[in-house]
Image (cartoon, rainbow, N blue to C red; front, top):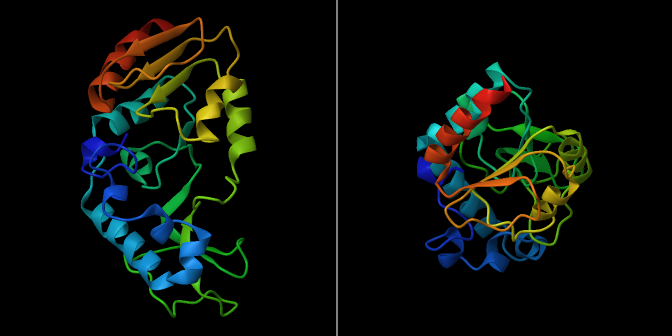
Amino acid sequence: MSQESGLKTFRDMGGIWEEYDVTEVASPEAWKKNPGLVLRFYNERRKQLREAKPNAGHLGIARLEEFFHVQVITQNVDDLHEQAGSTRVLHLHGELKKARSTADPSLVYTLDHWQLKLGDLCEKGSQLRPHIVWFGEAVPHMEEAASMVRAADFLVVIGTSLTVYPAAGLVHYARPEIPVWVIDPGNPAVSSQNVTYIPEKAGKGVEILEKMLKVYH
């Protein structure tokens, strides 16, 4: 979704993991072994995000709120949906612009700067860590996301290979009778009898989606 905004993806060709070993920057073990490297990795991502702007896909999704109750469920950790104007965004894998306490996960802070350093402490005196769901950690909002998909009258899947679980399993919570749109050049398979594939990147794909949805409002 954010690739057209200049943000690198984690799993596509040319993605972030070609530069870093995932086990060294995005796991609880990495944090214990070398917290400085982990902080530096996410500082780089945060700095990159400062230069990024919402693309046509983000803006198109935000415009749909004029006609529909839109709930965005994203695996992305950037805030480009919010910048575009979307008002209901659930971040499954955390938020890059936030940090949380290592002692009390309920203490979450919004950062007004891009650097998080060793020695930056929560109010209880414990080191702050990125507010990101690392590999090997539970995804805390999965039940909430599943409930949203169960209640949906339409489901739109954008820019995902549908290979990263548990998030990829959310499509199975959709009621079988609802229309499903899949926007992705790779056409990831979705087991639904009502699926429409739009083999485009997010920006162009959402533009096509907007035209298709006009019949519903």
